[in-house]
Image (cartoon, rainbow, N blue to C red; front, side, top):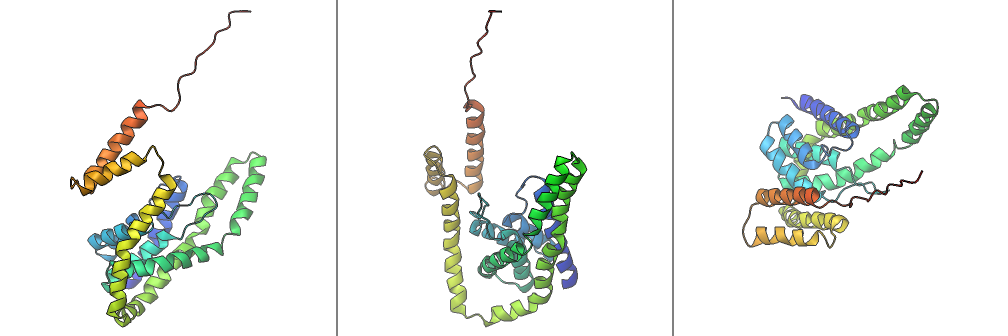
Length: 255
């Protein structure tokens, strides 16, 4: 498959995945591990795409929008970095070195189009006041479609014109820098886990965290086994420990 066709397919995939994720209520299909797999499928190396996507997922593990915080664009960065690394034969260290700055630049580029959203929101309020459900649906679907040209070009242009430049850049990088990236890449997943734990860790969850650590570190349980055990604990806890007690109903017989 030619570079031009790969660039087109990557851009189309980015638009479709973002559209599905937005309309489906944040399905998290735009996460790096999914984008890496898609890039590997399009660029002809699915195994490497999954490996790079999984490595980038660890880097951006704590990159979640909470409140007014807007995280870096890990979706675009993961798709583009994985595709470029597959096309040039680069390793995970280069993918990480590319993904982090690309995610920040893409976030800034997205901010240029942010003023459009309040205008659409005002139109949605106007149509809602008139009881026009079709107008609200038009805003909902149209908001995502308006972002397609930007999302397509952000992927298409760097991949189509940047593969040769990236190859020359990788050849120019000293080996000491590559080794430093390798060491940093082994530390960044721990930082991603720490960011995630800072958001969700509570006294109630803490014992389960140490349980997973003990199973993995001392009993050499594989990650899949620990994950399955965690799912079982979560399901049984939700099923047999209702958060609310049934309320007593008082019947008044006085009429």
